[in-house]
Each structure stands twice: as C-alpha cells, then as structure tokens.
Length: 356
Image (tube, rainbow, N blue to C red; front, side, top):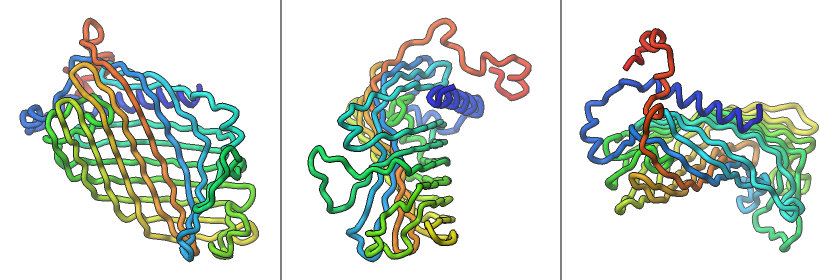
C-alpha cells in the first residue's frame, strides 16, 4: 500500500470513528447555532484541490541573532480530488512533477506525509507523521545568485510525528468547519476564544554536523551536532474570527503559549547530552474564500512552529499546510442518504448506541 493510499484509509477510518462518537448527541444551544451556522446533512460534497504540506527547520545564533540558517525540502505541490459522502470525508492527491531546473537549484527531496483530521462543532484534531530526506540551506543575509544552486544536504533526514488540536469556546457563533473544510456555512461574522495544543516528537539525523565548522564563531563550539530529537507538549490560548460579507469570508486565528521540551542531541565527537527546556509554541491559521449553499472555493494556510533553545542557539521547527480547493454540494438520493453507521450490523450498532 502506498503512503498516499494509507493516508486516505487512515482519514476514512478516523472520520468514521468521529462520526460514530458524535451520533445522537444534541446540544441545548442547537437552535441558537442554527441562526448563525448552516449545516448540510442531506448533501454530499465533491472537490478538487491543490495543496502543499511541508516541514522545515532553522537554527539561529543566540549570540548574534542576525545569524541563522534555514533548511528547507524541495517540496512540490500536490493535486487531487476529495469527497464527503456518508458523512465521511477522504482525499487522494499526487505529487506534481519537479522540473530539472528546480532539482539543480534546490536538490531532490523525498517525503512521506500522512495526515488524519477529526473535526467536531468546536474542536479539531490533526494526527500526523512526516519524514523528509534532502534539504537545501539558506543563510540569513546571504543572497544566492540567480540560477545558482543552493548548498544542499542530501544526508539530512527529519521525522515529525504527533497531534495538533484546537478548541473553540463559542460554538454558537463560530464554525471551524466553515472556513477550513466547508462542511458547514457560517452566515454571520463572529469569533471565539480558542485553545490550541500540540504533542509531538521531532528528530534530525545527518551523516555529519548539520552546521559546518565555520559557524562555530557565531553559534558556539557546541553546535556541531549531527543528531537531535525533542519531545514537546504545549497548550496555547488564542483567538479566531471570521469576517463574513454575503457568501465571502476571511478567517484569521492566532495562538501562542509556553512549550515544554525534552531535548537530546549528539555532537560528532562528544558524548550525547540531555536537557529540558521551556520555550514557546505558536499556531497560525488563515483562510479566505467563498461559501454558498452549492458552490464553494477557498484557500487556507495552517502552520505550527516550535522554538527550542539549546547551548548558544535556538532551533525552530515548522510544519505547514497550504490548500486551495474548489467544490460543489449535491443533493443526496438513494443509497447516498445513508450514513456510515447504517452499514454496521444492527446488533453491533445497538450495542454501540448508534441505532437510529
């Protein structure tokens, strides 16, 4: 099974489990919410998409903050299709080809990126597993001549696994689903205080020191690591707001908070070190688009950054997702009016309290 097929199966399974968990639950404020949020229980959705999901990291000197090196994979965009049917959503996408000119300038990167998303009326969870091989390096203040290749590190590999979550306090006036997956339609401008969080494990492995010896002058003598890993847990408060003008919308969401890191790093010729750090975590989300009863389109950006200080440097890791989608809602008919739990044997459904 390919990584993309596995991701699609994981998304279908996780969304199905979410559908099962919320079946039959009613909220006393549903009538108030209906005035501000429109749902589409009798429609199925189809959409096309263009997206780019990536993970990068940078190292900044704490002695000379203007000195920083960023490592970025030569990512390509993905194109594909998605469907929301039986109240289960799934996407399938494929990499667009990278031209030879781009390979010469930025190198070749290999990636595996699995993502499953669960969403409720006021919360969302992203389960992710990323692996990237091959990066190109860019230094702050240093310009690469047009057409010239960037310094490339084929030996660097990163792995990023964990879960990100967001919880919106006010479910009656604000809809997470409306701005980011269009399964709902927010009718009036409104916002909510939010709480975001993350739990993840990030590793960097390289055949030689990630930063060359010449960087020791500004980054310190202890910067020559070739292996690093950290585990992070963080909870960050913030605010989100959607401005609605007819069927057009603009959403912005920002949250920042403390993060606790357990850090391990291995220098090339020294014993490994362990340390504990308390730094910060940020979650930024932006969305812009058009959402009507049938047709919808929009673009969105979601990015999380983690900041880890060690020795005389700060490591910043960022994972982000950009999506542009165009979709249409169709009225359900026949078998399409069923839900995922309708295909479960009645005895099992009754045991799980899913019987309609």
